[in-house]
Amino acid sequence: PRPPQIVTVPRPPRPTFTMNKLHDKHDLRLALKDWIREFGEEGPYEEDVGALAKYLGRVVTEERDMFKAVAVVKWFEWIIGDFADADARFEKKRWEEALGSVKDGVQMAAAERGLGEVRFV
Image 1 (tube, rainbow, N blue to C red):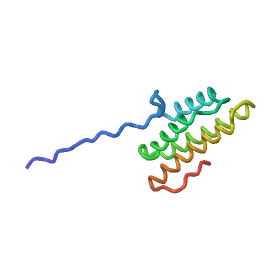
Image 2: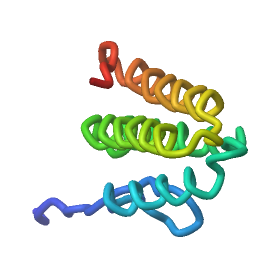
Image 3: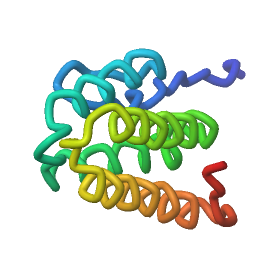
Image 4: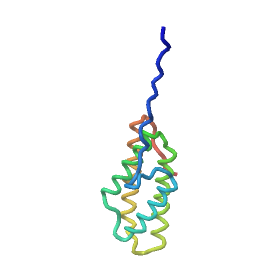
């Protein structure tokens, strides 16, 4: 008899964010900071917020890296507060709404995986 054939299945591609295909936490932090700096006074576009929420949802469901998703959300929250404290013209309310949408996206992905409530502390 012939030995069993070993089949190697490649891993699915890692979820990426932006056209630059970012996936490293450090690069994501820099991109978020640049985004907030650029659009701080007018607030984020809904489609950009949706893209971030979708990306982090994929980090939870596909990459299975809850730590990374929570770390990016916490950084997003911190940098919003930092910009809000430094500039009275910063559109804090719209950015905080964006943060809420991103957190909701991570919560939904966690629920899809059968995980409990995510605490962003």
